Amino acid sequence: MTKPIGIFDSGVGGLTVLKEIRRLLPNESLIYFGDTAHAPYGGKDAETLIARGREITEFFLKHDTKMVIMACGTSSSTSYDRLCAEFPHLPITDTIRPAAAETVRLALQTPDFRPVLIATQATINSGLFAAEYNAGCKSKMPHIPSKPAQSNLPELPKLHLRACPMFAPIAEAGFVGGHPVACFAAKNYLADLRGKVNALILGCTHYPLLKPALAKVLGEITFIDPAEACARAARDAAKNLPPPDTPPEIRYCTSGDPEKFSKLARIILNEKIVCEKIASFK
Ligand code: DGL
Image (cartoon, rainbow, N blue to C red; front, side, top):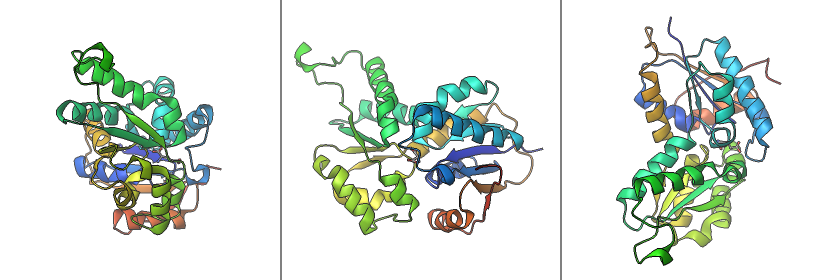
């Protein structure tokens, strides 16, 4: 019997990852869980986020899930190691590690690479992306010193960091795309970076939903969307798992309001979806 892949986020943001998973793994059955009753995740402490991840993973296991994708930068940066340790037989893929590896790859091949990570407060505070990025750059570019004073060689591409705590709630409220509310927030958080940076890492899976607002404020910029790197990592992990043997099915579940979730998910996915409320989640 086909075992599904479980994908979770605090809300609709992880649908940006689900889209990529469907593109790269079109035959897989999926269960998506949006934890909207507990959103946003970005201001919560690590223990609370680990407990959320645990409850959702247990729900997935009741549905015989063969792999879990943390389609949430905040969970990925605070809870990944703990969940891997607690569920040692379950393959888990996150968004932050693959995105950091992809950013290192771009840093190597892009002259004048000036990246900024935008993410929730919890993701920035965890320091995980910056640690992975800096370690990756140093291992791939050992010939380049990290301090310019050491020689006249160029520095390692410095990563800027910026927490944007209101972006996920703004997207959850439906103010997506180039909505004036999204543009107002983007201007407040990011206007000073215009011209200083040229690559924007969307460290929270809600942020691709605000791309037009971000582009308006930052001008010409390369977007680095973790969804693509995460989906590639999931595709690699899926190679070692039993392949699907029935036509793919997708279930959408939430701990919050299923009508509200369905309405927004339809806009994001551009198709009719019906979301169910899971009563066991309080
Ligand atoms: N989409 C999430 C992330 O990638 C969660 C944002 C939130 O709930 O604050 O970080």
